[in-house]
Image 1 (cartoon, helix red, strand yellow):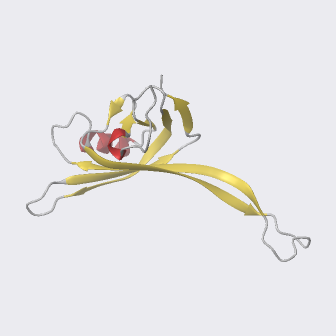
Image 2: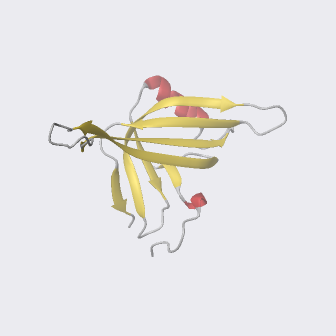
Image 3: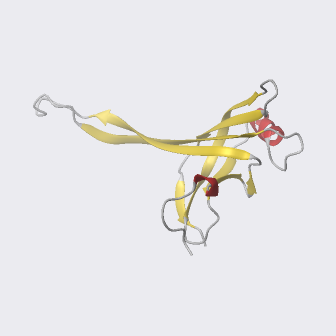
Length: 136
C-alpha cells in the first residue's frame, strides 16, 4: 500500500544497482530543463521561451565506514573506472514512485573532522532519461 501524508525523508534511499548506499544521512535529486529563446519582433518586447534539453543530477551524503556493505570504497572504484551505473531513488514501499536512470559519478569527497564522525559526499550526473515508475 502506498505511503500517505507527508513523506519522512528517511524513507527515500539511494540505490546503486540493487544495493543501497550504506550509512546515508541524506540524498537529493534534481531535474532541470534548459530553455531556448524564441523571441522575435512579434513578441511585443517580451521574452518567449520553448522547452529545451532535460538533465538530472543526484547527490548523497553519508557516514564513512571502512567495512560498509556499499560505501565510499565502492563508489571510489566506480568513479575511477568511469563506469555508468544505474541509480534508483526509492522508498521500497509498494505503490510509491521510484526514480531511476543511468548516471556517472562526477565527484566523491570525504570529510574527517577532529573528534567527529567521518563523512562522505557523492555527486552523480544523469546520462539519459530519469524514469518514474510505481513500486510493485
